[in-house]
Length: 112
Length: 112
Image 1 (cartoon, each protein chain N blue to C red):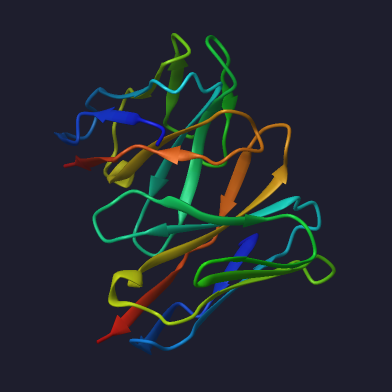
Image 2 (image 1 turned 90 degrees about the vertical axis):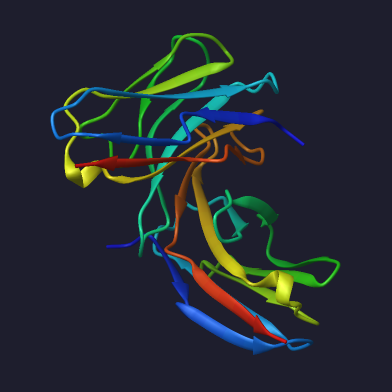
């Protein structure tokens, strides 16, 4: 069973709209959640990380975490065409090793 | 930003062939990782290392060996390549187990 599940698989939002991406772990040992963004033909780059319950905001990006339900979400407001990319959620279940378990990703397309 | 380089960027080999993928980081990072990325999957961890001479098994290690010769250099070896190993391979490094992983540009491998 996939330990990190992301939804939806793909998402289309209009320019200026809000994009909401979800991620859930089935392993209760998760310590951190990470969000990476991968533009087409490029390597993944870390966007945000969160390990405490609650919310974290950086510019147009907000991450929520509910540790009880092992669920995190990424929200992008005022979406831009340059935000079109594959968004990967990763869970760290052992902070001694640095091992990350990635979900399959959400493909976001922002239509001008 | 942290610098991770990979070589070659593209490689074609035949079934049963011998392939070595190279990764170098100049960030003085302790942790290095090898991932593969396939369509429909996120990133899957093959092997990782805490430092020179250290090797740890990841989640999909079958058919792969790795060597960490120095703090900077991490190699992935496919001694009897199979078509199922056709994939996009990423190397990453991080300062510690709880820090951001920085990815190289990737190596696209085709096994005929």
